[in-house]
Length: 294
View 1: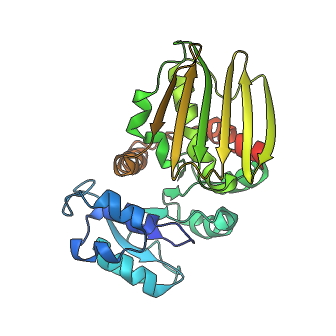
View 2: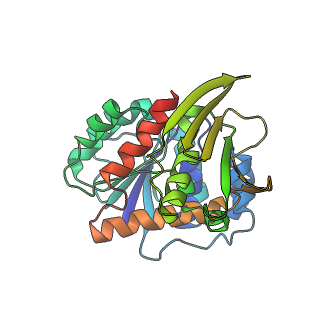
């Protein structure tokens, strides 16, 4: 399977990291990757590791061709395209590795007619109107795949069971609400589902802004979930669970490599199975919560 990857957007290093996870990478170039977090989590990875021997990123396009050339050198990508014209030739799937969601519709409108599977970097949209416009471009049900990579974080298995007298869950992320709230929402959606609860059936909500932090509080009868973006307490995402005994349990997502690897593997599996991993209802519910906090 040959994949074409499209980047870049400010502050987002996914063209580097996702290509490296799929293709392996050149250890000699790692120190020159302009994202310290990516340098950190790839440092202990064997550079010849590949996601799947039958899958490779074979071409890349970025508006800044020098950026694309550097990613290609680092992640052993054969071809750097100077234009999106004929980009879909000789590939089997496309990854949009940039989170400038306001440009997603126009880019997908160009790419969707090629009828190739497309992974769309998070968030696919921040309101239902834009989501529905994008979904209307699909040529078949499983053409699009989009989520937070942190949905696949292995640390979720360490979350306490909600039935263990959990009365509050506070989640913090350093990033802005529009682009980073999905990193809180998608893991919680998975966690609640595993506990037999619909995360989107909260009884009430309250939104506030405190010292430039956006707080969205969701109430599920006795359980309170507080989502905080723009936090200075964390870089990444932190989950704090509190029970009736006033005991707290703190969990941070640190295994980014595994989360992204599993996300990319899931995309590849969706291509093979031709069956969507995330339903339209999943996407709609996530976007509704993003919109609620906007």
